[in-house]
Amino acid sequence: MAHLFGRHAHDVFETGFYSEDFDFDVRIQLGMAPYGGADAGEVLRTIVDVKDGDHEAWFSAWSALGARLRTQAEGSDAAGHRVSAASAYLRCANAFAVAVNAAAALGDDDRLHTAFRAHRSAWDAFVDRAPYRAERVEVPYGDETMPGYFFAASDGPGPLPTLILVNGSDGAISGMWATGGLGGLRRGYNVFMFDGPGQQSMLFDRNIPFRHDWEAVLTPVVDTLVARADVDAARLAAYGISQAGYWLPRALAFEHRIAAAVADPGVVDVSQSWLAHFPKSELALVEKGEKEKFDHGMRLAMHYSASVSRLWKFRARPYGKDSPYDTIVEMMTYRLSDEDAARITTPLLITSPEKEQFWPGQSEQLAQMVPNGTLQPFTADEGADYHCQPLARLLTDERMFDWLDVRLGR
Image (cartoon, rainbow, N blue to C red; front, side, top):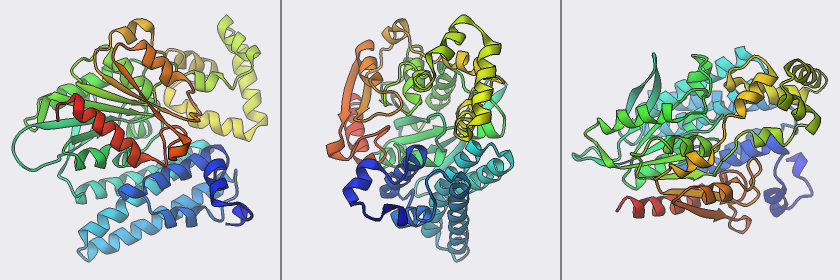
């Protein structure tokens, strides 16, 4: 890699392949390799010719990898090699997932929807060939439904402990195979994953935005699962990754049928990851309710800065608001109050990775707020630093499932 010449391997690990978002994408992809979600050589070859900050090239590189893997999967499938086909389809889905986020940041809806359809068709092809029995489940949600996938740990009779996976703000559902999905199945947990409001198909196909009161999302999921004969209703667990480190604790303040849960990491105030980057003068306009002035300033900033415009388009879209002011006001409702935290009766494991870049210090804050919280540090010396420990997913699974097993009496 030309842009890595003169750097040692340790330097790359510490400082990254790229700056900011590109680098985090690479770390996430590499971290999925032990679960078959990516192949390290494919990832490194994909990024070798992409310069830092070249968003068009980033989109094209990951789209090309996805297309190649799709062709490879289809060839294996046509020849009757089901295991190989499933493996390639999963990696294909994850490659197109990077392309989806790249297109979202570019503000190109045509490419976004094309990439998303390619991602989702690859994921569905994997589900149909997965090494565990899989079932598509529609969860009632008002006048709509939420699409979910139930993976059974065993084909035998009898109810089993079941893990609910709650995704973050922009994660693909295929990524959850490597963040709790396969780890749970290997340990005898049924696994249920789904798209909630503002996530993936609910956003791109139906234009349904995020909501702060996630109990309205989790409770119908729990209702759906406890009605199943293969689910042990007394041994339900839940795992929330990234922004779900807020959504899950918020839901647990009202939904008490979860026996144990994990927040990775803990998030008390979602808006802080945004507000920390705003000048105080701009935030003062929000506090004063001066919508027109704030929106004018934001639109000027986006007009003169392509990076600001890209970031805003990507991050603001799921909140479903037309103006920057309304988006910020909406986001400021994504806060866990002391009163809600005190209502949580579920034992909660809270990860705390060193160098947490989005919500630093909030894992510790959440652990102090909830009645039955356990703080689990992850360190740079373990190779487990940064948001959600992207390069230490095996270690994350080992710690969280050992903890869950004890709480669920396994």
